[in-house]
Length: 254
Image (tube, rainbow, N blue to C red):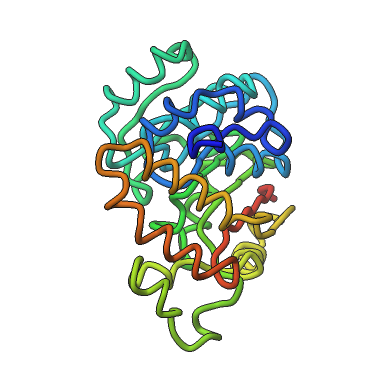
């Protein structure tokens, strides 16, 4: 089995496996976003016609998935990717009429309050959503009963409890791992606001293995792939799931 073919896993990710892995690698901005989104969506109730904010949408793979798989109307918001570049991805994927690309910084969102049925964020929330004040800000944009779901890099134990970032992780990602929290940290962080009710907070099963498969595919199929991904591959193999994971967290607005 090649590294590319290993990204097709219909037994575990039937929806994601219908997408061309080469297309997905071409939109790479982090570990397989469709696997993360498909797993997260099992804890959400996404229905046709919903208006969904894809916050930190990157180059657009997750927004395409939300429009195609769940019949949603999607606002793809990202600070780093030019809207015209994302719009070209959406048009080529045949969802240009259902996905709107917007350049937006996560703390200054240009939307009306209570204008979304759901907000999802895949492999991005760790960059802007860990402060105590962020959920109260973000919840403004959800309708009553609206859903929030994130997939974010996680630790199996809090760095605070460990006393330091484990050396094999610190060597590769540095201080960023301080923002990689446990699922239970996220549960408390959201529940304590009483603005939402957390409906699920879990670590993704074998997340480090999924991450490793993705990194190996990037190493094999991207021009600079080996140099860029080998440190991550080495980190994941050394870790073996002891500390590294992804947290999948969902909630409903009260």
